[in-house]
Length: 332
Image (cartoon, rainbow, N blue to C red):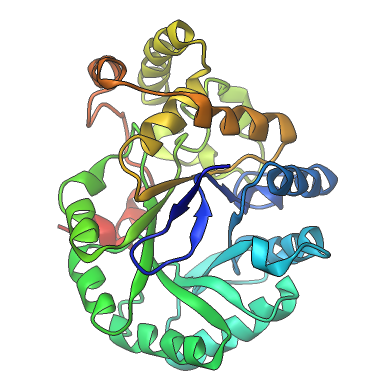
């Protein structure tokens, strides 16, 4: 497994990370616990070291699953990235964000217990809390770094101004943000800011939640699946987006690769400072995703991809309108 430096101040991590959100019920409907654990083990066996989760994924169940899967693994061979701050209710609803310093330490205490670890490698607020200055939130995490409970501080879905303010308080190792052939908004202002400051990127949604995986069909979004309400999966948009996938498939076949591998390889090719997070929750999908590491895209390949899936080609926003309004990264 190729290893890369995550930002100027971050840890060395595998060139592809594993996003665990879909491994427990919630955002993507039902999940197979045994297969999820088997997939986590397969990822470790393949040399994947970066595992990403959120304390609010399945209201804590996701962290407990990871804790179970990692039991017995050498702690120094795995980097666990945790997002915090999103608030849930007993019915599974979303009720806002809380990034007050006292809340930061409370969330961290529960994550350490659920994961069964003594420290978290990268800790980050999931979204900007508009009621709390980012300097206060980062300052609280910095105290936890000093105390040994956190190794590195990251950010998620924030814009250039917030990135600069956060970095003025403590070194930031990476920004976690959606980046894919269909979501390229970071290229205008966010990516240049990160590179100026020496901050890496962990890119989620590299397959646009399965839309450009080459495997998507409309009947796959079952009960409780976020994609049933996601704009890009709605009638009128999904057909246009899947037409892009078919154009991409022709390029993939010429390279002897799958659509998913081309899409992941494209993200990886955008820079050594970008680590794609793949959301595989089955061993076969993980194996396919890791195959992207063997796909080399030259300038001719990249130009061909750009021609069939140009910037801005996606039909529909990446989140419903109310959720887009809460993304600091989308405020211009």
